[in-house]
Image (cartoon, rainbow, N blue to C red; front, side):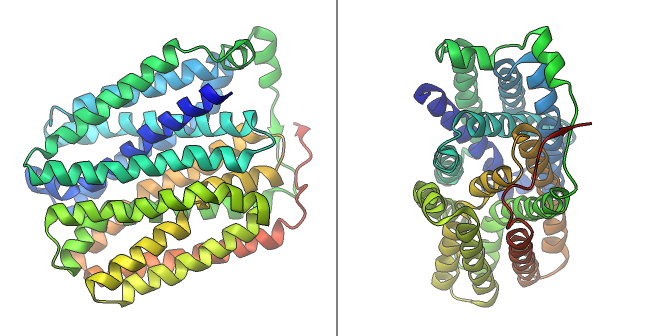
Length: 398
């Protein structure tokens, strides 16, 4: 069990880098290709359209081909896409390759996340917080690496670095054994198992309202996180005296506090309850993002950025565990739906944010993000009220 958890952590490290690498060097890409922020947003949007396809296909492929082979396919797609990025193809080709990258890290995120929740039934929050911590570490180290590469005028090396890490992870999924019991769970299912998996399950009428609110929450959360993290260096360049390399490095402040929070979020959520942890975190996030929008000084903005990272540290992982604890028996489908909704938000909001960045002041962008976070808090409170009965789902066959 420990070996597969660590490989899952490494996989989340890879997708953490893949999620954030675009924002870390977005300013350089926009300059290199002489395109607008909106065009940069289109590139990010294309990745998340592929992300959506990967997430939605994940349960189907894993039920037919097995979880290991599905993860190998996804990791292979990501590795190939990042290798193509490394060639700095013409911009139109970068836009074409982007969905392949998104397909890879989207499928990895949903399949590995569902796998961990299924394997660690008695410590789901702790296990999810561990792999989410490594997602945060990946998102933390790539801005620091990008800042170093930008300062040395070799920012193009960001893509080959990710290609190498992704390729190594692919080889580990291909070659490692986790013991007979887990290997059997990861292997291609037999004809009888595929027939059993093909039985269509449906959500009960009691679970649907809760699920819809949860889907809206994840749509807003991932959209906001991707918008803020991808455009934070550009926002800091506009609002503060920081240089390009320093602004890129400051993205690590956000993800650094994400990592710190994720070290403890699973323990806190298991001790005090999932929903209590989530509501308190969202209240902190609302305060932080309003502060970022209002305050002018560099120090104040950076402090609020750190608080926002700490507040959001466990929202995604603990949110997945909370929803699956309320809707039992459909982990893979529920996880896929929620991550897919996040993918749609991740595709749409960076495009919207790029449009606002191009046509309005940065303050308008920050106000938009603060409003989205406030709506997320409302969604979380609604989830708390609707999900009071933790046994919302009695699985039935259609």
